[in-house]
Image (tube, rainbow, N blue to C red; front, side, top):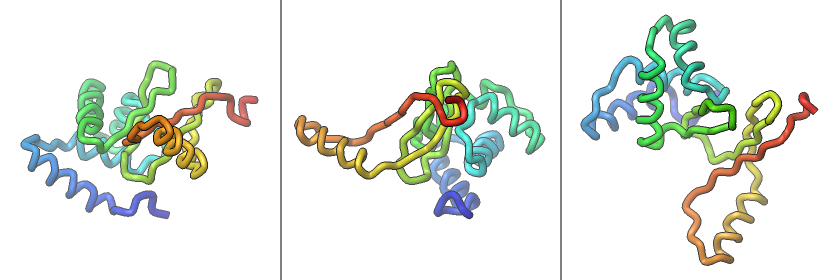
Length: 148
């Protein structure tokens, strides 16, 4: 099953074109970080990204490079970060439909969910308060079934 509507090759080509139009240089490190995020179902820390690059793709990149790159990707709105409260941000591509997160405070497991009732209620709350909703991030903290 394909996770995203766009193939990785198409996604990477569009990324390279965008970076070029903005006057930035692309690098093999950026390509590999995008590839790792595209093909991984987990929310990865910078350290995990660096380890996957080294162990699976035999590409050695410093942790500082990973941090600079994911920050750059966040600025371009290609990547979303998620702070689960353990001191390490997690990253995911911003290519899928909107979703929210539940985080287990015991094992740090991250579950994605989408609930139309919650989505509609947020719009209603914003409207009732004369607030124009442009985006939202919802994170629910608790204990997963396995840790209970």
